[in-house]
Length: 246
Image (cartoon, rainbow, N blue to C red; front, top):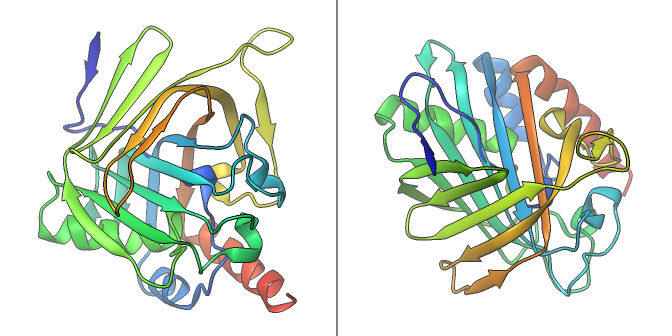
């Protein structure tokens, strides 16, 4: 097993079924206008839905709720003048029963964000601000935790561990032709999820927020990306218009 460490380089983590800026983006947009930022990294994501996750297409989750995580591992990043190289953050969330992600966003059962414990005070505040963009608040309130976030790779298997709270182990599946299936421009795509590779979990567990998840053979997604504040500012303005029409 090869341990991936993040000192001056990193890869990034993520949500559930990729939660994007569906809620009120006011605070996130204000932060974007005040401080510019840019992140290059990788996304690890898993949820309880059967692959591929229908939530991205405004459909109901495969099970009663969509229980999901996402993690961002930052290879190179900055928030203003604050370097974020080698850091990570993650999120665990759960949608209401029998409701699509889009129609219920902002009213999810819980929203917990995990910040890399290696970050200093400035970096922690910067990562919290970035969470407003990468992980828009899905519930009425948000809880923060500081925890070790790591990833191991064993062959095709990617194993993301967030402290004592959760593990997502997943691998890409084979497409009909060479390589893994790629999902491009789903209806609810944000800049980080503009395209992603499709896979399947081997294990998805979570023990926090009163939960005890034990899933396998469920949805897994992986992506490499470079995004910045200008891209998210544009995306969040567009999503605000869509939400205003609902």
